[in-house]
Length: 211
Picture 1: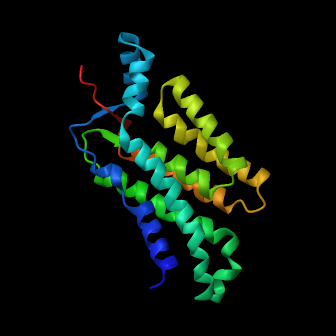
Picture 2: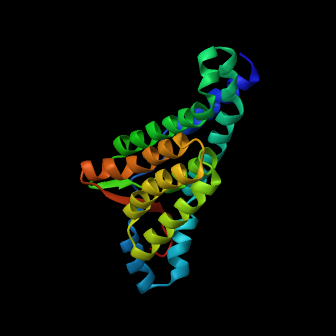
Picture 3: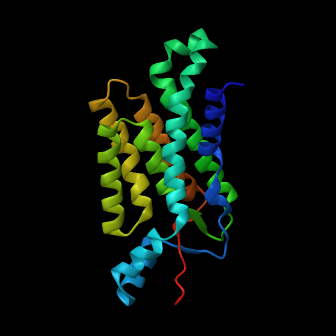
């Protein structure tokens, strides 16, 4: 097996393995409303530090970015195996890794066991979209979702707003809207599963020594 194929398999596994599902239940899990209450009782910096100092967010962002880049750099090797693939490469090289990422967030939802709660994989979704969806589409959609979710203190708004925004901007700004559509499916999956299972979306935070 050649090096490009090893990179392809490793990158695909990075996108597929649901690492957040195995976070310890001893971690602190918060929704944005709870973090806002903590901010009022303490300071905005303490609240922000709890989120940013949790290494899992950065690992998830990195594996979304690097896994997607690795798949893109090597997946064109399939064109030498299947002539049919070459005719669909314009969309398949983006849609296939987004499909792996979607399977990952499904696994996160079902493997993570915490009563009444479901993880919001925002860093992983954001990192994946920044690579696999054109930046002119991904950046405005992510910005809108993050700002509105933070302002209205609702993690669900990130997924609710980003998914349709990707579709609209994909049709308006991109000649091949399939990556944006696949990205919308990825983004909508966590909120759809949480709603269907009546779970509250939360993010893990680093527990401070004083807490």
